[in-house]
Image 1 (cartoon, one colour):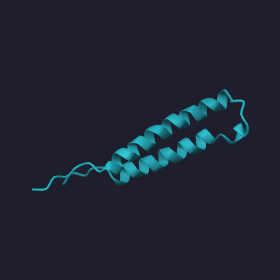
Image 2: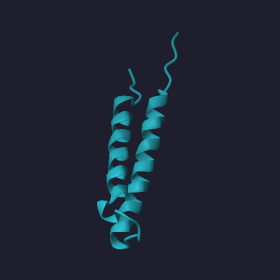
Image 3: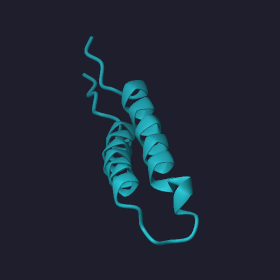
Image 4: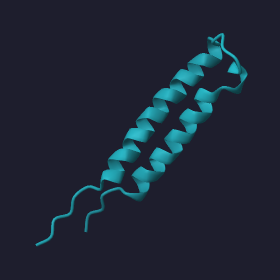
Length: 68
């Protein structure tokens, strides 16, 4: 009898995806209410949030639990 658990990488991917969506949302908010910081025109929050979301969803897809 073997037990199959959910891989930890699935949860890490889900966490990265959630953080990515939150950072992306904050970055999109910054488009309409620009902060007064240097290099704000680069919109780092949007890029970083999108990257984390894509990586997180990739991990979720790659390590999702599969039934037999």
